[in-house]
Image (tube, rainbow, N blue to C red; front, top):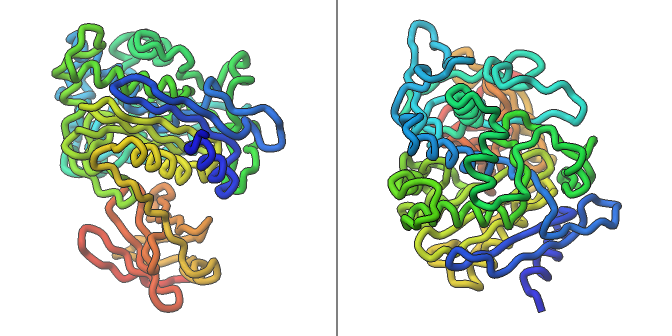
Length: 442
């Protein structure tokens, strides 16, 4: 009896996630593969081990791995100002101050750059160029990328920074990113099912899972497209993600077939900056990968519209797993699945119990927090209630989601900040140990 599959099938039903696929590794080798559910709700086509899913933000460590290959070749210096090598676009000055940003900072989300993530584009919509994305001009649907923190001082997740890396790799090599990643990473590691293809070519669409919302309903057009390739554009399978984890470990161990040097692999798995994310079992950021236990455990999660996934591996034992899903509630499914795998296989130091994100007492209570507030000086904060969370716009910033932690507390996913709901809709903003009263305007 396949206990893992049985539990995942139960979770598919409970969480309204149509399908999932997974791979388990031990000593760097795949020891179990599986799949459950369907490619699209309402259709009979089953998810298989070869079904393509969007890797979402797991696209990032794969892109960083390619960057490190170019560092090994002497084409890039991880500590050089990236504006010296960018030719199609440059990180803009902030007023009279021109920030210096390095590849190391881009790869560790410590560059102080804006734009945490990307919503994608519905199929058939006009897609922006990379430069349009970086400048934040139409048809791009996000703000431009710029530095608004001092680089190197603070972890702040920036998909925008990864797009800067994407443009830099193209500028330095003169090769389109999709082709470059196929040459540098995907084909050499045997990731033959994987492709940075946005939009997805017609010949691959029959193999691809459809994205679904939190109620298990298919997204219009089946999925969104992500021209932000390095940040969110990889289509792949759990088997291929396991091959990537194996490739990182091979390099760390200095094996002959490794694609990057042991020095680069050690940098990849060495904490570059601490992180403050209450939902992540990792506590530091390496180059492209989240880390725990001093780099002994590494991995990355992913969240695109209608897709959620997670990859985790152990540097020394070669244990690990990848789980991919085609539903907005798939993050919890992946967390549960990997915790079960970890418990069954005795992963050292892994949190076997999944702390689920608590909801507040009722939707009615949550909605009392909705409205506009003055936070500090003239900064206005606009709050809306959505799916058990608070979506917040600070002034001109993009929407930042604060997920419920219970007891009226909401934590931001990508910054070290909380909102606390007390009384009848009164909010307090907490950041860096300081509390700010939120003065309601409407």
